[in-house]
Length: 640
Image (tube, rainbow, N blue to C red):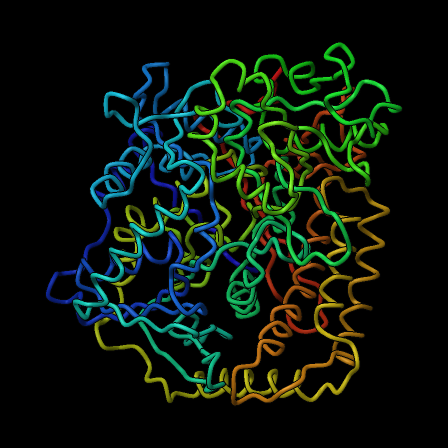
């Protein structure tokens, strides 16, 4: 059984991080260049971590499967990044950001980690402005803010609808500087396929070059995973198609615990599914809910009418009706389930009946079209490109879709896994958001972890490792890991089946969405746990992977990733079945209040569920880390 010691510092909540930095072990500057750190991933968390660690003097290798770090999925974040600057003088503070985040997560995140995130948020904006990130500004030149879901203050900094892209350019510039200075060796087109564990510590990785097929070993004193989330287990999601779980899943199979895998966010504002041919879904930023009003017809018979023919008195602005205190800016899990509810009542719009309107007529009348265009122009352009509809004159049609994963590898306060030497950053870990992430907090966590947390905490581990003591990459553990990787690649290429990989991914996605998506129940989860192993067995017998190993082979890449999703999907459903409560985005139909809101069970489930791999064909072990709230009282969320 894994030992889950969160290593939370003692003392008052607001003093824990300051005290920890003062007490933490340090590495002598002249010794830092004797340590080598591997960073896997080069999105916001990975690029910022690699650049900052190299600035400190560590020798860094950074691996990314894209042709450039600028293709990382961080670029897709649209709406903004939270920070407790209180520039609007509207009552914001570090504590309020902390409380909004922990409440938004339905009291299922670790208190100390979440408070540190709120503390560090104020530094992120200064860092990014210094890098030249072009945040929106008010007429007088001051940085502008807007509101996001789950908050009653304006604390979100933004760059129109391209915030993730602009932040990534800033992190990429820092990374590029250190690549040029020789502090970082950047490996593009390089996919991590296994973690190497030596004497119980993470000491390297096995990598495949996606262009040549060459498989290589890389040793280091510590390994940092910043590889994003696993939402593509649903197949249709807002993730880039290349986003995958392979790095964290292979680490799980090597002993790293996987925490709360069923905590997956469904985003309420996405362009609805339009047909079976789609490969992905498209996000419409939550920022649109600042000025857009969400509604459906009050009567079923009006759902197919053009929206302009539905009179105002026959429209149900259901979020404003159900949650008057927060209205259209209630948290994502609540807004998503409300949309599902009105569609289940037969009032959903569009041909499929799975859609609601996001209407900007009132905002255009109040502000003028030019002001709306200035705030959201590129988002309206994206909507037009996909739907051929002009959202300035007709409402957008939106519907919830898989968007983010709050679950991930278990980490302690230092962001280190239960596997010593393995650090996990950003969306790849579980620590900060509980059962639901508030909007504009993903960018905040990625940059907080990379710029301001890991540079301190990794030294605490390395200080106890003798410089130059890491095993050479021709050691027995490296050879064995490489052989396993070669064996799996060979097995995929040699399957000799008739079905393409995409068909298995689509079938898995349907099982996951139908039985473990926005709502879950015991019967559906038990059915999924019967169907997924059957599908996985069929995959290995009948998958068709054309081409060869020694060249660019995207079918082979996809096959390896889907094979991991077929295992992860089962753990996901197992976790959802074991958690007999509703909290945040984990909504068990058996556990709800009469008004349809989540019914938590704090007596039995106020904990992190950290699953430990037990070997092929054996059920994983469910470990528990109790969530002891010293300074916050768990209460029933109320956004009404």
